[in-house]
Every structure is written in C-alpha cells, then in structure tokens.
Length: 314
Image (cartoon, rainbow, N blue to C red; front, top):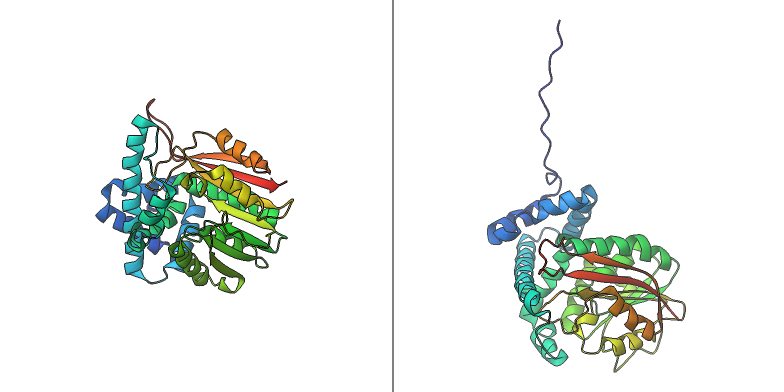
C-alpha cells in the first residue's frame, strides 16, 4: 500500500488549559476592546511560563469567584485607560499633575470605592498584563529572592495589593513578614492576598507611617515597590527605610519613571536620579534594571518605565 498523509494537526490555542485567563480575555474584549489583544501579546512576549504564572495567580486569589474576577478585570481596564490618558498629557508637559500627598491620601488611599473598584484590581492585574511589571517580577524572583534565602524576617513598606509580600512568603517557607502602609484599605487587600495563598500564619499587617512612627525592631531585609513616586520627599523617606533594615541587609526598591498616575507626585526621569537618592540614604546599589512599558515609536512619545534596584544597607 502507498503511504497516506496524516491530516495536518491544528495548533491548539494556548489558552485552552488556562480557563481563567481566557475569561479575562473575553471580558476585556467585551468591555475594553482597546485591550482585547493584550493577552495574546503577553503570550508572544513570555510564552508558557507567563500562562502558568498568571493562571495560578487567578485560580488562587479568585478561585471560582467569577463576579469578583470580572470586577477586577473591569478595574484593570479603567485603571489602564486612565493611565493612557495621563501619558498622552505627560507627553506634552513632561510634568505630573500637581497634587499634595494629603490630597492623594484622601482621593485615593482612603477612598474605598476607588481602591477596590479600580486601583487595587488594576495594580494586581498589571503584574502580568504590563510587560515592565512582569519583567520586574521575574527579576525579583530570579535575582533578589536567592540573596535573602537564609533571612528570617522582612518588612514590606507600602504593600499595594500585597503581591510582593505573597511572593516572598511563597518562595521562602521559613521567612516571616510584616506589611506596613498608611492605607488600611491596601492592608485589607494585602491580608486577603496572603490569606488566600495560605501564608497568613507567617505574616502580620500594621497601619504605619514609617517616617513619623517607625517600628522599634529592624528586619533582615526590606521590600519597597513603587512607593517613591507617590511622595513629596522620597529622599527623606528612603532615609527612614534604611533604619528599618539591619546593616548588610538586602533591600528591593523600585520606582516609576515617566509614568503619570492619579497619585504620582515625584517625577523621576531616569535610573540615575533614583540611585542618587538611594546612595544618599546609605543604600549601596548592588544591581539595577530599567524595564520599559513598550518600545518607543515616536520621537515625542514618552515611555513609562520601572526602575528597580537591589541594594544593601550600609
């Protein structure tokens, strides 16, 4: 008998094994068509590791809570649209919209509706849907976590959603952490994050301004992710952070560069401007990275970036 040709196998959809990511994609396509292709872009950027990562995050935090996942996806869409509008304005002015820290605190950090309907869901989803945020997460896991593998305690100051506290507790089964923030709403989400991942026995939260009322104990290591740009005087804040970690202890500190948001006050234009403040606060920079949000296509276009630093307390 002659050879027979097998029918050509169709390439399977990478989302067939990730139903929650598929749900997010469908929701974005329905509610925010501008972002309909973001899931496929991230798959092209990062491949199966990203799919496994994001699906596990969604299945652990949201579980089978479909309305909650849909609401979070909507929050991400609104958060990202606001960011795009502000970025267009920033392209022309190269200035953030002036606000005082107290104004931001009232409008954002103490505003339950804004925090839980838009801000916190937006930030949570952005860890996977914004390439600069996911690249920063990978760097944190691959380079910072090994440096603190034998440490016993950490502080996470300015916890946001609790994402990086969860990542640290997840990677290091023996470490214990404390999350601190001026926003009880952020801490509420932080506590929920850690609890849903099953790490709450090794973690506690404190409503605290570390500048005015610092804790009495120092931690072995420190996490401070995208807080500096929210402050009027980040240099002074960094000096307070330095007092929270033991001499020789490692710190993971990041800041947004050219990235307007409703509550961004202090404008960083490059990595060097952040590093100067870190050195003035007695942090020795061990390594640093610049993660752009996208590739620049127009001369007048600004690109939001993350400046990330691994430091050691001197």
